[in-house]
Length: 180
Image 1 (cartoon, helix red, strand yellow):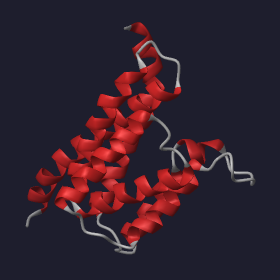
Image 2 (cartoon, rainbow, N blue to C red):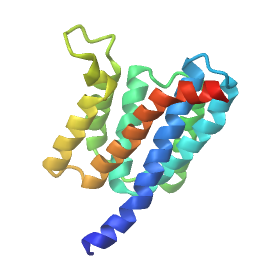
Image 3 (cartoon, one colour):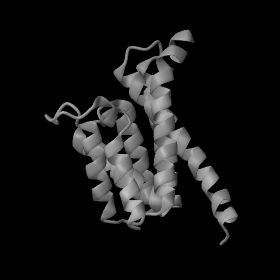
């Protein structure tokens, strides 16, 4: 395959990864913050991000490992804690169990990095807030997995696409939702 062909195949995955990040963050903030939207809107958003993540997990091996690890990390750290997220997780599991995914032990390494990023309150050492805010444990961990060829570059690119939109949505959603 040529590089151009691989890039053309990657663009839809990155767009879907961005959309999954957007819907997940909106579902999270609708559940956790006092916004003008009814908390029940978190359920369709959970279904939407669950469908997107589930599809990505069956469409791309790196996405499967990445999102599988993130989901396990969030479960371990207690971040899946609302109806929207329960529905999102159920949707992901329904897709994964229906179509199957390739399982890899790398999922557990990614889960450990993802869990570290969510344990700001539990870690009692002096680590700057931006490390947790930008999920640097996960990003550096996935980068190392790519460098040492345990994971493909698609996983790192999907992580950055997903997380960029997730972080930007967190910064903008309160202003945008309150204006509606």
